[in-house]
Amino acid sequence: MKVEAEGAGLEHPRFVAAVRTVGRRALLPGYLRLRVAGDENVPAEGGLLLAANHTSFLDGPVLFGVSPRPVTFLIKAEMFDGVIGWALRQLGQVPVKRGTPDRTALLTALNALHSGQVVGIFPEGSRGRQGGGFAEFERGIAWLALRSGAPVVPVAIAGAEQAWPRDAKLPKPRRPVTVYFGAPLRPVDAPAAATRKRVAAVSDTIRQALIEHLERAQEIQGQ
Image (cartoon, rainbow, N blue to C red; front, side, top):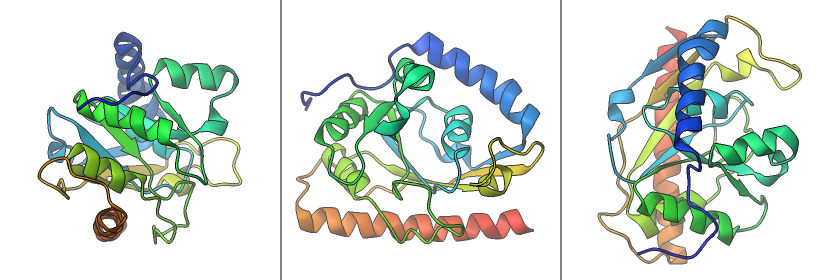
């Protein structure tokens, strides 16, 4: 099933591949003490949702660079201005309006999932508190999981907030940042109607899985 929406995912695959290659082989490991664990948990093909915690501006660039597969992120619309906005669009990223259900963004992401792409979401919406309590949790990812039937891989990003604190203009060099990919969840076996009750139930399931995965990742990071 394909739905009507603007675009659907990665716009310029060669540009995306070049940016990811430079980032993961040179920029990120050259600037940070970067570690990736559990990337074997990312299925090699098919529509997939990555759900990650969000505490720093580093989260998106790091996950975009180290993910085994290219990722289309839902990113707040305020970022799509000037040169940064141009670059995000060339990379196929999707602007989303915060504070209200953005049907255009959700349908664009759904089309990307139906075409076998990876969609990344930070369910906290904006940068959450340290520790990943997920007190604020957007339900768009549950809607997408239901409508697409795609599995959800929980992702814990540890150390990003210390590498790029809120009050710092630039990231601090050589700080440890680890990205942990967890085992895939499959909230539904096939695309299903996204009723309010189902969305609430799936949202709670994903939220709890993210909390537990982040707690495990933080324990490993502290060892």
